[in-house]
Length: 606
Ligand code: ADP
Ligand code: MG
Image (cartoon, rainbow, N blue to C red; front, side, top):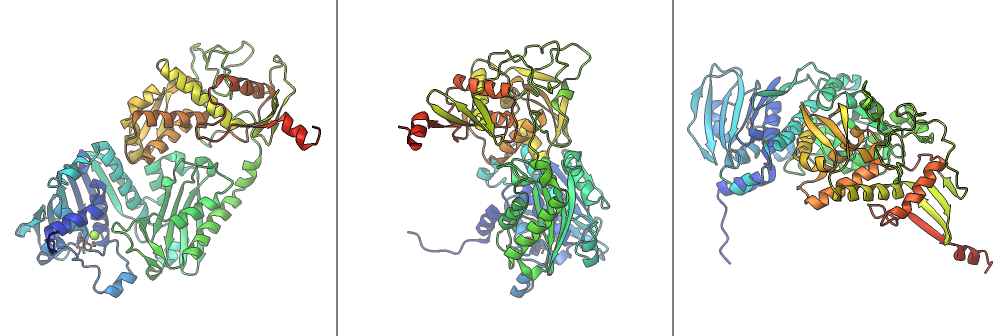
């Protein structure tokens, strides 16, 4: 074993950079936070090639005096903390004095700054930790930082960068969080307490194109609309709650606007975006009974509390915090959100059993609209028929009596109804069979059948698709859109055609005919949620399996869908056609058998 040595500051900075600077978006986060701490009113961010070539942040904040410029790059050098006690009432975004040192260690940085009251400023460069001399600089008051060729001297890390559009997606997400956090508040409670000041004017450009331009006066709801589209912003309810010195304000979304991951639950503590399990749990609990399992609410919540009540020095990136009164805050979030949902009387609405026609989420038009055409195209039979029968070709024209794709309100009186199937709780089918009494989970079975149908069809060639005459636009975050386009080829093989419409909007152009029941929008969102939740690109086999089971899950009848006798019969008959009817693609059983023999034995007949 070698002797113990103190590491040089160059090595220390590279190690620290590993903790704080993971990718271009981390640089953007640190630079934006510095600009905010400098009291800026306007911040402009310019990116080239997803940040691997250039990240430039220009602010109009307080600036740095010439003599301090070299110190800005020194590790553990900060103007924001003076003594250890300050750590317990932090009111700035930064305080560790580590970010510029880390960035300077792994990139080529130019720092130019001029304090507001000075007639001129100064500049210097830091290349891989090597500082240049300071020179005079004649720019506008404020600070201008350029970070070029990130990770140029750590090739392994540079290799880990993903495509520019994916990295840009992460940067957009960082930008979004900051822009939401620094909005002039419209909540009376905030205004009275003066917790959140004026809004910030923020711009983001990528390869010379404006991605976002968020003016100072733009209120929170409009910012949410700018980043997530009207699909989200039109379904929000404002919330406000208090507990001792803590205030909770923000918006929560209607349960119909649910998502497959919790990533759209934005939580800000004293103006800082954070992840917090306890408070995320409180949100989820408040929605209990209003969302299906595996679905997550959308929320934008701002918690403001005295700085000494929260420890932000838990994690190098400060994305996690520790609360002194975590249980009390859990209660504040839970009860504020819950009461607001109750005020909308959402519980009652959800308890009404849905009929054959699936309830589509608010705001998304039923898929029938998409096929509206003056031409006599064969209308798809699938859209509202929960159970396309295996014996019928999917593209079969509808019976002449049926108008377009409308749902027959009364079941056709043709097929005889077998008396020996009943539906319980709109979720289970009880069937009499030779072996005994079979209890089927309608969702699990239908999901399995669809899964196998999709799989078989894909194996025998490309999946039959239905082109959408009017492509359906789906608004996503920039990160989600980028990820979706990365997987465009795989999605095409699965029958899902997607195209970039720009600005985070994806157009769905084709759609698997098999899945006609749900709107393309619903399926795409589920698929996107899944893709974004993966840190690494999954293998083709895993990806296909996951996506097929997702599509099957989202197209299958649900617990809560009341089925007509014909639909029950069709579902039970299809059971014979599937290879593994015992388990749904998630491994849950699809049916339980109570043998006739067992019944008779339990009733002491044998
Ligand atoms: P921290 O933000 O934790 O203090 P940084 O390494 O991010 O550490 O920055 C070091 C110091 O450089 C800050 O404390 C601040 O004094 C100064 N600084 C950095 N960026 C700016 C800026 N945009 N405007 C004014 N001062 C800045
Ligand atoms: Mg900082």
